[in-house]
Every structure is written in C-alpha cells, then in structure tokens.
Length: 454
Image 1 (cartoon, one colour):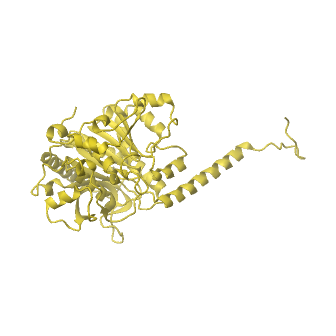
Image 2 (cartoon, helix red, strand yellow; image 1 turned 180 degrees about the horizontal axis):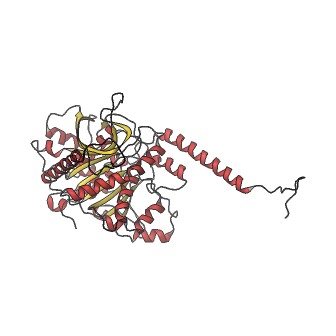
Image 3 (tube, one colour; image 1 turned 60 degrees about the vertical axis):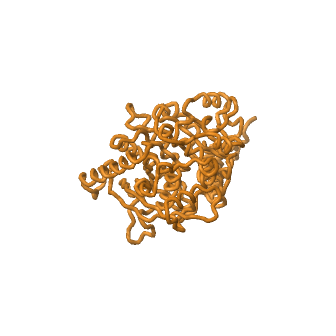
C-alpha cells in the first residue's frame, strides 16, 4: 500500500512518533488523575492526628494467653519503656504548629528518647498490662506523646557542606550518650536485639512515634526499639514529595545502622518498614549488601505493604541482599487498596499486592519458592486485615500482628509460626484454624527461645 500524497508532495502517513508520545502523555495524565482520585476516595495513609487509638491485642496474647511482659514489673517498666528515635526532620521554629519536629528536612540526624501517655489514664502497671492484652476492650484508649528529650546531632550526620553545625565534641558526645542508653536498655532485657521501625508517607513526627510505641509495647519491651522518623509530609497529595524524601535519607539510615553495629553490644539489628518506609529500609540494607565487607549486624528485614517494584527486588536479591540479612519477609494483601495509587502511577503491580495466579512466570515462581531466606506472606485471609483501606493490617489484624511479633521475637520460620503454603507456591497464608495453632504452641517464652540466634 502506498502513501497518499498531499498537494505539497508530503506524505499523508501519520506521524506515529508524535502520536505515540501524545498517547503516552494522555495515559500518564489519566493515571495521575485516577491515582489522586483513588487516594482521596480510599484515604491513602492514616489521618493526621497527635493521637493514636491503641491497636487490638494480637491473638497470640488475647487468645493464646502468651504474656510478653513476663519479665517486667511495676518497678522496672519505666526504664524498659524508653522509646528511642532518630530523625532528619528540622526542629520546630516559633511559628510551626508541631510540638517537636517540623515537616521540613533538617538534613542533620538528631536523636533522643520519647515518652508516651495513655488516655484515659491507667493507674498501675498491672492495669496497663491487663487492658492491652484484652481481646475485646470496652473502652477506647488513646496514645499521646508526653515528652521528647533530644541528645543532639549525631557524629554520623553529613555535616561537611553546612556552615552552622555543632562541634565535633558535641556530636561525639550525643552519639556516645545515645549508644550508651541503647546498651543500658539491652542489658535490662533478655533479648539483645535492636528493632528499627520506619513509617510510611503522609504522617508527621507525633504519629510515627506513637505507632512505634505500640510496636515496642506489644514486643514486650524486649531489646531496644528505635523509631527512624524521616521527613514525610502530612498530606495525601505528597506521595511524590515523600518518595523523594525516602531516597534522600537512605544514606542516613545506613549510617545509623553501621554506627549502632560498631558502638553498641546489639546482637542483631532488625529492620521493619511500612508502606513507603519499606523502600527506605530495603535501600539501606541493599547499600550495606553491596559493600565489600558489610559493616552491620543485620537480622530480619520485614517489609509491610511495600510499593517496591518486583524487578528491583529480584535484582537486589541477585546482588546478594540475602547474604547481608538473616531473611527478608514481604507482607502483602489482596485488599490493600492504598497501593492502588502506586500501581496506577507506575503501571505495574507492587510487591505488597497479592498477585493473581499466573501473573508471574512459572519459572520465577519456582525459583522464588526455592530461595532460602525469602518469605512472602499473604494476609488477605487474616482476621480484620481488610479494615479501612486494608493498608494498615499490621495494626488492625490481630493475626497479622501476631505473626509479626513471633517473627521478631523468635527464630521461627513461617511453617513453624503456623502459616501454610501449597506445594509449588511461593506465598505463605493464614489457615482458618490459625488461633487454634497459636493456642497449641509455646511460641514465645523464656530466654532460650527469644535470645539465641541460630
């Protein structure tokens, strides 16, 4: 077939290159529009408050009668309950509405200790213990920050390019004090691990600290808990801004991990990332893995509701990520509608979303199933996993939180934690009789279970 000629002799063939680019532009705009609409409809990320409703007690505690506070008393709980934080948020100025740190980048890494109160107040430690382990509470309890004490700017901050920074002596002192307090916390605990939690997007300093406190509390105040509070923005429309902030702080988190490995007695450092925070912990662990001699004692790498691209994950595994950590666990869900925004923007499934059967090549499924140290856990069938937009199931689902805490406090693999996987599949799932399994096992107990690494 020949082209029809215009009177001026030019071809009437469509300029396909320009049309394709125009179609791509329209598709991109459509995706962005749909993403924003989806975000507004499903309320991506939690609402921003300076308080958090206490999460349900994990089934492990409420029904299986496991007591994570066996070695804690009214006389020891105050010292055991220190919540550590590290942040690159800027300190508040006079006109900032926040109480402690703003939503702007401060570049330098600061850290300290935070305290949290519960409302309505509970008079005794026994009251706190009883209420938090109840399966069906009659009253809603809220957590609020009550105190934040900063040690100062840490010596592993990037200071070379900034004119006004503390002296080396001041920064070294802040670092030593932080490490010493971590060690003191570890000395009080039968568990000698550090747990670092990184939050998702669309949150401020307070919200992130309060969720960290929940996790620390239900871990039974074992080990030392650090909230890594990166500069997220409390706005549902800040997805791209926060994605860039994640990438800008990965070196900071890596430096923190290396500093704690070199300057504390911690046996292992576990990393737990949620939502956009999964990209941060994954990238930091990946950077450590790429070093000729990793300078970190990493334990488990746990990623909840992750928006990472599957191809990037596979490449990282092939580059030796599993050699730098004990294992990697991805929690995913079929009902996680918040990840729809990320999927629409990038045009590909995210690893935190349950894939339909057949969307991965059989050869890849087979290869992943054989990969030691890689665990993919689908929480779709877990109780209350679809609460709200289905994205914060690690707090809303007492089954999902139970598996998370068992994973962090023991060396059990998924089958030992009661999860099931069909032959040839790569994904672990919760069986209908999951509570009965928990009741039949002694999953968390004295020091021999909690403290020894294999």
